Amino acid sequence: MYEGVLTKMKTEFSSPINYFLEFENEFIHMNQLLDRKIKFTFVKFECLNCHLDKEIFRQGFCKSCFFEVPQAADWILKPELSKAHLNEEERDLAFEKKMQLQPHIVYLALSSDVKVGVTRKSQVPTRWIDQGASQAIEVVEVPNRYLAGITEVALKEHMTDKTNWRKMLTNDIIDADLIAEKDRLDDFLPDEVKEYYLESNKNLFDLNYPVLDYPKKVKSLNLKKTPEYEGVLKGIKGQYLIFEDQTVFNIRSYEGFVVRIDIY
Image (cartoon, rainbow, N blue to C red; front, side, top):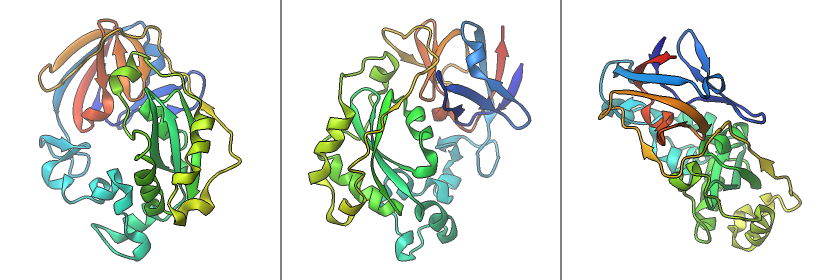
């Protein structure tokens, strides 16, 4: 039996990818639980910032912390709103400079359809694993988050920037040539980004997940409505646990929830 506050699973790039659920003083190697029965029991909330038992609002934070901490500012989800390169503060300039003024990658990933996305270079390939991508390729490497953001805005005029999580989890993935898709995007890059285009890059990342059986149709576990759930683990993809009864559990959506985990 384990108990702790949920945060997104840590990953190790291997074939298949290794997943680890970490608590304060212990961790679970989730791959070792495939084909075993697991029971999740919701215990209480614990905000990832103030650590109080206050209902989680978004991204693992209670409502008051969500609107105060720099980790939940608008530029996190909308990189084009980054302003650290202008020396302008949104919530915490030191934190914003640390996170925004570092190399960023604009990439294409194949998770359901071909999507465009942004990540810090230090988060390659973790970001793609968290999205459940089966393949990915780097398109541009820029020196800050703002340039990556305006690139994403320009490219999503020509393709999606969202993952269809249901298709990703049922392994309903289109057949696509990411190298060809990357090559056609050169003409759509903003002028200030063209010099950062990785024209010669043909390096495809292939990602293999620990999944024994893909579900045909998925139903999402809601810990608020179902505070106790028990099922046999059949796979892990993205930040989702996939169970034999076709229930899927998005660990990242429940950051800040304290749970007890029983393994049989």
